[in-house]
Amino acid sequence: MKFSMIHENYNVYDLDKSLDFYQKALGLKEIRRKVAKDGSFIIVYIGNEYSDFELELTWMRDMDRPYDLGDCEFHLAFRVDDFEAAHKLHGEMGCICFENHDMGIYFITDPDGYWLEILPQ
Image (cartoon, rainbow, N blue to C red; front, side):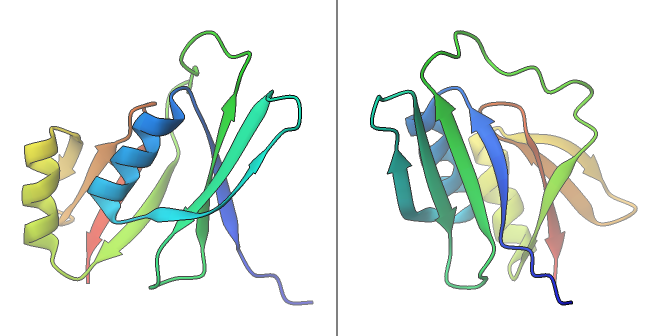
């Protein structure tokens, strides 16, 4: 059997804010969306032309508070071809939440508090 990873889901409190963040910070764009007939949820798949992997953002109408991410001991990683330019952009956006200079990596946080690791080529 062969398994291929296709997407990861993040539940988001403010879908538009999250879509704006992922577009600006990582160049991820909407690929498709599914809207519940009763309006109870919206699922938006985002990605780019460099990978088949997608991030699924799920908005739930009845969620009345930001999500509790616990200890946030998980993350999604992105490799970037221009690490310095990415670091500059994320610094200007104010979304860098942790840097490990010894390892040569850093993390950014999205509007809901999800951590995203940024690695050089």
